[in-house]
Amino acid sequence: MTPEYAIEGIYSVKSDIFSFGILLLEITMGRKNFLGFNCRFPTLLAHAWQSWNEGKGLDLIDPILSKDSCRPDQVLRYIHIGLLCVQEDANSRPTMSSVVLMLKTETISLPKPERPAFFTGRCTNMQDQIAANSCTINGLTISDDLPR
Image (cartoon, rainbow, N blue to C red):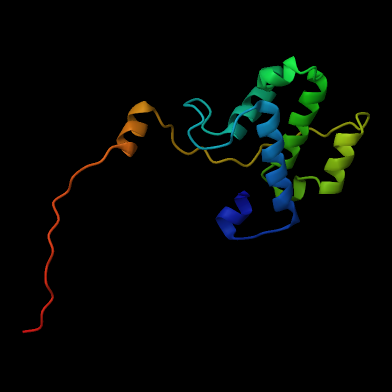
């Protein structure tokens, strides 16, 4: 869900671009985007952005893609395009026609992505997950509502 829709209820053509960017990152990284990704990076976007800024983009690539004869530079380009699609400012996100052109033409230079929109959420650990899945027995009282 785009931040502008989650916060302000605004939906635009750039909302689809955001969703496409998430999907592109999930495919290239081989992971789903959800809160509780891990304690250091609470979302997939946070992980992708941090690794990209540290110059560790190759660490983001799904190992299965490396085995399937995908060129690492090509997959890094897809991650770059994904990060362009999930920028916080909707006006900075490319149009879908631009994204298609970027995907088809490797000679087009890509702009530097700005900070993506992501919510930090909270870190979940195993104890939180166990507590969420456990049941408790509560006392229940029923009162009869009868007229006097």
